[in-house]
Length: 225
Image (cartoon, rainbow, N blue to C red):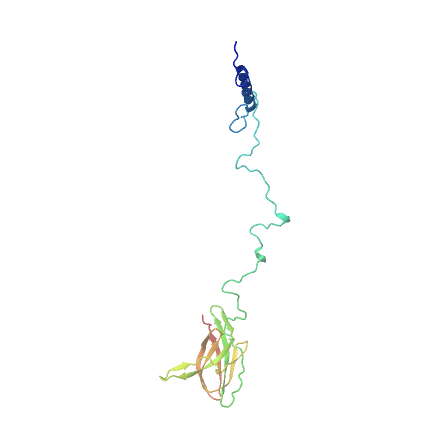
């Protein structure tokens, strides 16, 4: 029988055998295809025996109270109970409209006063200035300045008041509310109260003559708004 050889002179049967061996080796190396997740599913091998009670679950259901202790403050800090610091230790604020004025009296004070004698050609004016606090009472009042505004007559014959100026006579003021104007030229005057932020008239107008001493008595005023 004639044998046929390939170009390497190997019989055809030997070629088939070698090819089959190579395919077998490749299949053994690759193995079966893996699952999609790379891990084969595990079968539940536990079998509940007949009449056996299922084991209770130790998982905590949602919303259950797990009994966790409250977080303790760091560094042993003392936590004050609600609402906090004792109100008695807080600074006290005086209620509206403010603290009560000391020395307030139910009736206008009328402190005794001794006015000096007038010198020749001039006069003396005095009295006691009192502030009325509506609904509360009266208190002696000593403004920043108390001046005499001289009254002049306009061309139409009507009087006009002259406010304070650098030449207006200023009174000597006492804490008791007593005021004294000394060495005042004769003329028509009115009291002008200066409280720093504004000026306003007080009392009635009066006429002073040479050598005269006028006690205006209790001059009661209300501070303007």
